[in-house]
Image 1 (cartoon, helix red, strand yellow):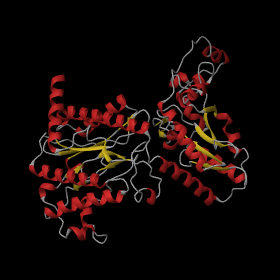
Image 2 (tube, helix red, strand yellow):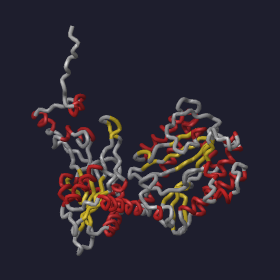
Image 3 (cartoon, helix red, strand yellow):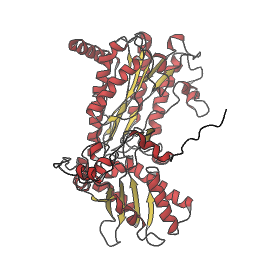
Image 4 (cartoon, rainbow, N blue to C red):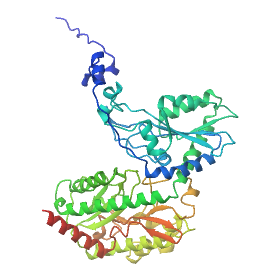
Length: 514
């Protein structure tokens, strides 16, 4: 009896992904699929942002005269196998084109340098995939761009209408990138993190043209990314309006959470019931959530970035919710509120909550034009340390704790208390320390103030009744010529009395709808 194994037929593994989808390939089918369709209009109009990107591009170009600047939108990112995450353009690309949503995967913005005699330093050109409508075979063959798959999408003309920018076919990109690139003529910089394929192409062009110092090229690209991040620190009128929209939508998301609160109590994965309530509003009123929604009940709340949201909500617990809606233009709010699940703060919960509230107010009062992020942080830390010392938890003096050699109070607040906010939830992160933490607070900046107290369930250094409680209060602030303005506190309740009244109001609305 033979023991030889049967030989398996070998096939090219790259072709196996096509096994699940058998598409007709005949010429008659191709002809049939590109005939008999009426016109389909994507219905675009000039974006409100198009009036504001002119100045942004002008300022960027002036800083890099004579250099070709490359800003990719990025590509789809694989979630698993042949499924992608929803596309979101790179932040720098969005800032300089005004484009949000999910239309332009693979697009590239290039600032092409003009002659020194020209008034404008650069000509911005947006390279895009043209429409794959019913006149093309990509209509039904391309799952990425074919309108049979993804619906009518803007093409070159439509993107020109939306942005006001010169638009060209992506097939023309390579020739422009390489044009006149050589020492003494044109140099290239790229936002290298956005699209690895574009970065590789730029590196090959630089190397072939004699720019072979990899470290120098990286430094140039990093400087470019840093400049773009710092530019976003000062918001224009359009950006402030978008932030207000994001905050209002976030309020509506919190409302929906509170209306679902009672139905989540004692339910398996009750945190996810509340997550779903918020995320539904984010998709209805905006593009999506601005970041992973944190629904942290009871002992989950001292975990700063609890995003599993898998646990049960108990009536006796506190509930920390950190969430923000991202608008269609991709600007996001970032709000945290902490609720008593029962609807009424106990005396202990009230004491801890008020301490965090007072620390946030101290940070707000320290946030004045000409001051720094460090001033906000130090004011919040002093207030928290004083409360911890008053309760007998902080065994050293407040001054010793606040000293660089001490910092014992940070056991219960190890993170920062403020960050820039805008197109990214942690916006402008590529800026250097002296341009961020050490920089003066300037009118036009939008940032958070978010102190907290986090008492882990197994923390034996605090009273038993504190253990398993985490409280954070986070609001969004606009710096103006006259000082800081709460963008969110006027929209989203935050005092003890306001929070309890808000919970009652939403509970009544929920009962009325049943």
